[in-house]
Length: 122
Image (cartoon, rainbow, N blue to C red; front, side, top):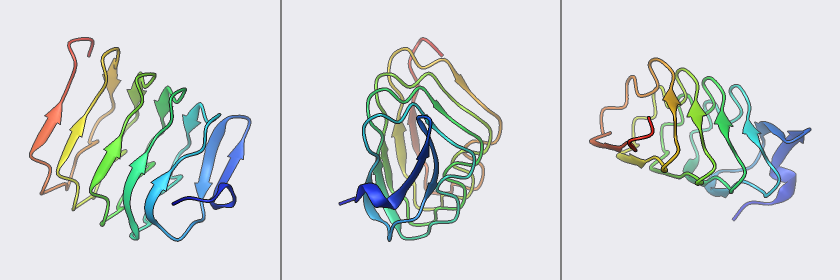
């Protein structure tokens, strides 16, 4: 379980995660996940992103080697480049209806990623 003190949030942008990992639930009120906000946090197993988040910036979860699952909100519209680069434990992702774009190399070096469910809106 996450503690609000685990997150650095500035003007609705989650800029850094400083928690211990495990199952992470991002607090309500976040509109964007910033560049490298969770990068190289190898203790994160799962992430629940709240409704209202529309964008995930470049390399946000880069090299989170223990990350297995991510729960996206219906409000998500896009993810930038290399968001899940090197997430070697990630096995599947389901993007919501209304999702519109994915940046380059988002899933590079994700050897266990066998299923990506993309909506027609992409």
